[in-house]
Image 1 (spheres, rainbow over the protein chains, first blue to last red):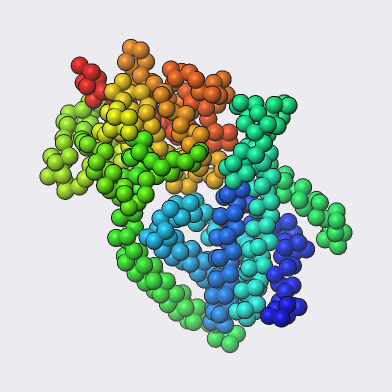
Image 2: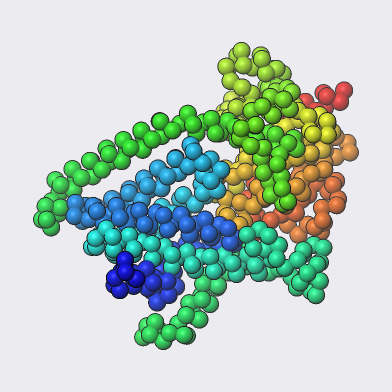
Length: 214
Length: 262
């Protein structure tokens, strides 16, 4: 790691496990529940947030000395909202297909608590490069959980991954279904996302006692 | 530094400046990109209509439109007629050809904004109903109507192709902001293809529509006259929206098809 100092590397690796935005900071839960019924949607959301977090954190960090503290939350909101809308408009004009896939996520990205949380907690007090790393790290940690939950829910709920049947055909009763396996339709509903995230948190904390609050 | 950014005058100036700059950038972007965007939307409508006619590049279980480069040509070739019906106080009072409609409004019938027409129906009782007549790849004459309604979060819309007996020959649904993995799946083929062959009319010719039904005891969708297709688990409200828009919007076309038979 010649490019990144030890401290900088920690910025990226920490949010992955021991300081994961979803499982430890419990931020960004709303979108984690809403869109993880499918693996593809989880991946799209993870990539979008990665982009917005990286760029947004840098912009906020560069402006940190001129943003009036009284209205900083509003300023952050305006910046992230305009960033997302700009990208959305460009995609609509030059990559229409992609923009249709993303349209649902635009609102979810703007209101994602992780983005506001990192702006507030990190970018306002740190330089551009470190803010960029922090943004990427947190978005990756968020995306990792999102994709994990999406994987579990799609596999158990629909028996598919990325839309491709992997467990056989539930109507023709082939593959795993021939021995009596059934899809768990409950997995597709939001409450199950909460339970899956809960189980992940449980596993994580039982492996690392330092994470348990008194 | 601390003092300067804490002052009220600075805060207000900053807020005003930010709004002007951001507003300016967004307005500039929106204006300069709008021709490209509206062109994309136009081609998308053509692709949608071609899709329900059966002219598409479907592969496996994926719904794929014909390419944007060939869509206008294919549209010209396969959509042989566009007509506009004027719906007023419960009946169809006028039928215009594409040329007549364009002479009156300067607009292509396929670009008629269904949302505006629905509002007009609510307020004045008058609504323009576009209908596109085209040929499927098998040479069947099909009638395509646009429909629009409400899903869980926002608008849902689509196109339905029927034959002269109002038996569904193709559907395409789309949505603005339904939940990915749940309501958003109305644009998946496993849902849309279920409508194929479903009857909209009873034997006696009464418009019945198609209900997106939970607990449908016909998962393979072999019964085509039960006026039901299987719902998507976890997407009840979006499914109800599809049921409603088929009933409300397609039902209006019934007099046209009754005339066609006589």
